[in-house]
Structure formats: structure tokens, C-alpha cells
Length: 397
View 1 (cartoon, rainbow, N blue to C red):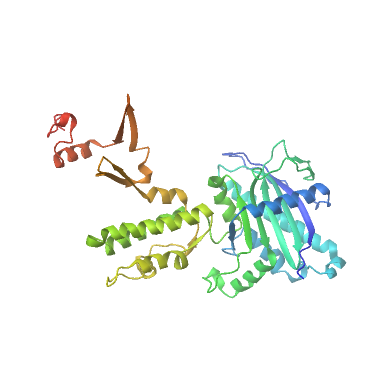
View 2 (view 1 turned 180 degrees about the vertical axis):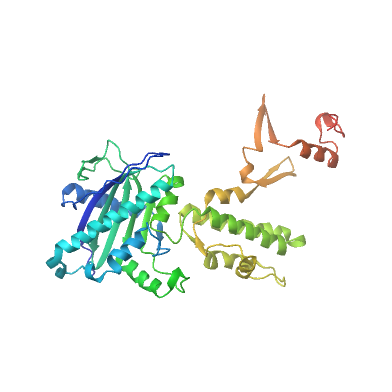
């Protein structure tokens, strides 16, 4: 029978003072003693632990060699230090003070690393930083969180939790739960591949994390660990869109143009599914098969993976699609008229900006914004489109 008993080994709450767009850097408040186990602290642990059930973000570390990251300090203080290895057995009790000092020192290093990343992001704000080491069954875990500093949260000047009844999901700006045993295994594998070279096998996703206020938090939170498979990767999403457009333009032109648009829609739909689920997409598993299986019979079209590699545009094999970048690239179709023979096609990013509905009395007009040059060109190419039904541009432009 699997043992799922939870045992909190050490816990502490440090603090980072930072206001949005602050130019004056304030040192983090680092506590000098681990906290005693209290009912309030147990409730805080349960609240943080339960919050992960609502999140869908799982990943693993990108690197163990970047300073000011969780992975770096865990490796330095635990994995690479046999004299201070944290044991989960009862033998550890004989040197309890030494082990506790490792937890305390590591918690300070982690908080200082988070402080570094917070101050790199101007719009970010600080807060309380609960750090908890615990075992669940045979596994050792670490929970790190950044909790808003407000009057509603009762934490005293020494960082002790007095009351957690007002802490909720919106209060937790960022939290990560890391299986340190799985992390150690990955670190050992990385040691066999110097300089963070590409791994032949994808590690288990031993990091479970969540965040609120995504636009601000995602930058520092993911770099702080650092996360290998980032969500909302605008750079990768835009690069994939660019390569896909180029691929379709080169191999689905002429008589295959309509099929090319259908293929593009299928890929975008798949990307949107992963975006809505807040999951990372794997190009080789999730995108390449869609494109390769769509190839018309007899057409000489290369595999999409080979085409990507030939373009030399850097795209991670796995990343979280960025919703904003994706929606800006998706086209929409408007069909009007009694016979549905009036059609407008454009990118979604123009909706409400260059393409919108205007009201004149009881009438509604579909408006499309034009530049002076575009207006002149339209009038010349399509007589009768100018105001008052004239076939010429009376304005002379």
C-alpha cells in the first residue's frame, strides 16, 4: 500500500519589499530561524498544496547552471554537497541541527534569487515568500510561493503565520511545488550532458506551478526556477506562425491555395486548444502530424519538421502558445447579402479597429478603414465604389 502521509520538515516565510516601477532596491527580509509548527502554518501548507489542483502547468528545469535560480541553489546546497545531503530517513534526526541549517540557508538563497528576478521586472510587486520542505510518502518536496502583502493576511514582523482565513487563490501570485527526488534524477542526467546540451529523452515533469496576473508574473516566475517549457511564449508562437505561413506560401500556392488556408486553420485550432488548456504543445507530436497528413496525394511537399530545420528560424520543440500572438494571426470571414455573395476576410487583430460596425440612425454600416493611398487604388481598380456612385474619384486624389 502506498504511503501518502505528509510530514512537514521545515518551513519559513521571508519577505520581499517591492512596489511596481520602484527605482530604489530594498534588500529582502530574511528570517534567521525556521518556524515552529503551528495550526496556522499547517493551514497555510494545505491551502498552497490544494491550490495546485486547480492549475495545469507542469514542467521541468531548463538548466542547473544559471545563478539566481531555484535549480542552481538546490543543486549547490543539496545535490552537490554530500556532507549536507538532506535525508528522509530517521537517521537524519541524529544531526537535526545540521539538516535544519541546510533548509534555512537554502530558503534564503531561493528568496534572494526571487528578489533578483522581481527587480528585473519593473511592473512586478513583492510580498511574503513561504517556503516549505516536506515529504509525502517516499518523496521529498519543496513548495515556494509569493503571496500578496496586504492587511488581510495576518503574518507578524517575524514572518510567523497568525491567521490564513483570508488567503485565497487571488492572494497567491505565484507558487511552485517541486519533487526534489525527480529533480535530483534530472540533475544527474544533466551532469552527463555538459553545458545544458539537448537531452535525448524528455524528463518527468516534476514541477507543478501556478500563477495569477499572468502578463507580469510569467516573465520572472518562469525564469526564477527556470522552467524548460514556458507558457505564453510569444517568441516561439510568432516564429511558428512565420514558418507556417512561409511553408504554405511555398507549397500550397495556385490550385492548392484554398487547401493551404484550411491547413492553417487546423493548425491554429490545435494551438488554441493548448492555449485554452494552458498546456505546452510539442511540435513533433502535436503539430507535425497534422501538417504531414494533410499533404495532397502526389504533391511534392516536404515534411514540416524538415522545412523548419531548413529555415534556421529558432523555435523550441515544446512551448506554451501565446494567445495574443495567435489570435492576431487568425483570419475571420464575414459573409453578407441576400445571396451571401459579399465576403470580407481579414486578420482578427483588425476587428474593432480597422473593421467595425457603425450606426447611422436606424442603419448599420460595416466600416473598413482605408489610407488615402488605399482609397485611390480601390477607386481606380473598382469603378463605382467611390461616394455617390461615381466611377471616378471626384476629390482628385
